[in-house]
Amino acid sequence: MNNQALKELLYKMADDQLILGHRNSEWTGMGPLLEEDIAFSSMAQDKIGQSLALYTLLQELGERDPDTVAFTRNANQFHNCQLVELPNQEYDFSLIRHFLFDTAEALRFEMLSESSYEPLAQLARKIRGELRYHTLHANTWIKQLGTATPESIDRLQKSLENALPFALGIFEHSPHEQELISSNIFLGEETLKKRWKEKVESVISQTDLTLPDWILVEPTFGGRIGEHTAHLQPLLDEMSEVFKIDPTAEW
Amino acid sequence: MQKIIYSNIKSHWDEKKLVSKEQILTWLEEVKDPEIPVLSLVDLGVITDVIVNSDHVLVEMTPTFVGCPALDYMKLEVETLLKTKGFNPHVKVSFRKPWSSDLISEKGKAALKKYGLAPPPSNKIFTDLEILETAICPRCDGDNTEMKSPFGPTLCRALFYCHDCKEAFEQFKPL
Image (cartoon, rainbow over all chains, first blue to last red; front, side):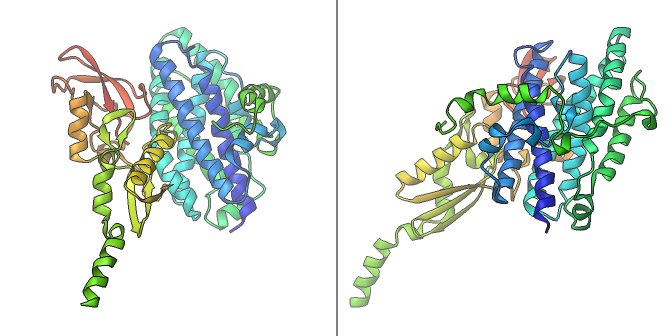
């Protein structure tokens, strides 16, 4: 078992969940309709809870406690993909991001439910069931708005094109890719990307949206090694504002 | 004679040791889900193991949803109850046996319906999520229902509308 490889995998997954969970929570009280307000708030709660469970696995491997890890690192110490840190923008972008990210995340946890690292496999078997509701939500709305009016189709199409390079950044290779694969911890980012493309294509084909040729989409990498857009640090400052007033407070 | 006296004393001393897992589970019926106060943790299916060793009791629990905010509260309630029974409890959260809505007992499902929440259908039929599941209305038992949103007031509830009695209702989600 290579602990470094395992930790790197857990950190990037936990950071993805935490940062997107925070972005989803920004829709609380702001959703375009009440059900969507509740949906994004619920998904925020799921994702932040899932990040806590992943940070707890890291703590069991000798890392610091989840609150310290979540609230005291700077942007360059985060391993989330850049897709999740981008601002919510309008609802069409949030929806497209949610669809592209959660399709990958659901497949990732499905793969990890067979992981040779049993604590992660146990957690993945749990989380994959919860993520079915996230993909159900995303697919329903993409299909509905992707076939609705010229405006909704046009908005989703533009957001899709903007988000795709960042979405491919989800699958940035880990320096430990081969170790993870050979030790059966994780089947690897390439396998995940292949399954993700198939799923994305199958949903988009049921709409009036079009996917560009994948070869023409240049992936935006860097997030996994701590290189981020200017949007991440302000998010972290806001998220940790209360914690930093008194880091030793008992909640 | 001496032997008998000794065994009497011993049985008094070991009273706690004789408490079975079943007895602990019966006591735990008193602890309810704080978000659904008619449903005990035992009927909800979140107590996955109980190990009694003298006055030490290990209770293994698992959350319904990973992000369930009621988990710490439920842990505390279990510990408090077992302390009042004279035990030294330890509650461990584990995903060894992940929770599924199929773990809700028949008694629990009946309590949910009485409370106005549609009990979850078997999660076996919940494999294809392209299809929006329907639920039986807990008020009129009508099946002409429609899912309005898979997300509701808590993580474990979905929003439905019944076209038979024209009322909105919530379903405890299958998972």
